Length: 282
Figure (cartoon, rainbow, N blue to C red):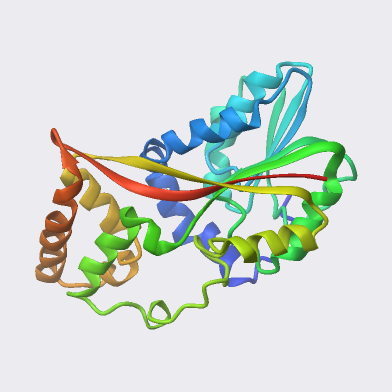
């Protein structure tokens, strides 16, 4: 079932090159954000018999953990717009009876009224074209006693794990034109970084008791060369580097190595991150 606009640029990205690239590197991505995932799961505190919706569920790690917590008396629905990524979640959950994954756009798909005790997301709600309408759709599907709990990134300048290597790269190769003066609220990883903007969206969508808790955590990026390889494939400079010469790629790798050295300890790279742990009620 494909309840999304197949012609939109975002949907095309997540179902073509972008989605395939994420699927190929999903184990690395999940290992990096594991410390944040644990914080999210603890905050959700899912109970036996609850029904949960995981928005932008990716490879299904959060969904599967929730399914174990709510047990057979409860259920979990994971939705994601990316077919390459959702197929990984479906394969991982083949033996789990109380979970299902569907390729859907949570922003607009019919989710039913008052269906879920829990609506959550691990970095999956920052890409809505119209966030107020999207969160209104989620709000309508939440039970009157339900809770919304999700993680999203704070500002780029607060996240050196992605900002510092990108800066090093763009001193050697030119940044994309739209990366120079981006709209901070445009769909993308940091669209919900501003506290007032995010609070206004959730309030306009009908949510109450809105709380934004800042979470600062070091992300395990692996050994230095592993971190560099990942950032050159998946970071902000990845698109430009794809067409760069081997000499330029080598220069970028050296520059990244230098800037990441300050985060290295005992052969492992751990870089600070900054997120909002957001909670709200209906």
